[in-house]
Image 1 (cartoon, rainbow over the protein chains, first blue to last red):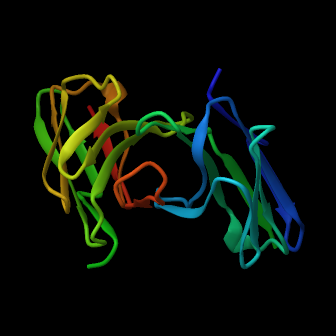
Image 2: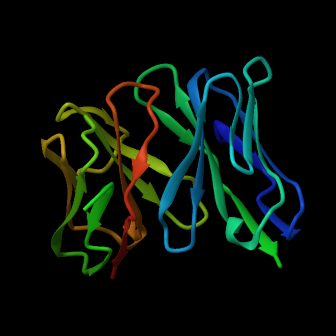
Length: 109
Length: 113
């Protein structure tokens, strides 16, 4: 079993829909990261959070430390949001990162 | 050049070849990372360098040999690779320490024939 589990694995949405991607982790963490990977491979860091909630534009990330769970929300989704979204747990012991397998999002116009 | 750059972007090599991947960061960071991303698998952290010193080696086979001559440059030397080593190799950098945001390069798509 992977230390970081994401759901769903694949998600298709209509443009404008509200989207939620979930991440559960089983290790102690110093931070939780949400990454975006577009076709071709390039990865962009969206959020790094250790508590509460962060918002950038239409993206919102939340984390519940007690439940070891984080969510990434996209409001008013757009086709350009189509990408793979990866959750990564930064272990609180050493320089270790654990990655989820990613959620492949397709937003249809 | 800004951000994190990687060369080459694509590489095809035979199992007996020796090649090197290069990563350069222009962000003033002190930590650099090599990751492997195979199809249908999570990203795997391979190596971590903090202030040019290797601080993590996640049981990576010796046919992968990293080198960090300074805080801005990171290499991954490859020799006698196997076809299962074919993957996307990503470099990242950050400020040194556990909880800093990482900035990723575009990756090198490696195919071993």
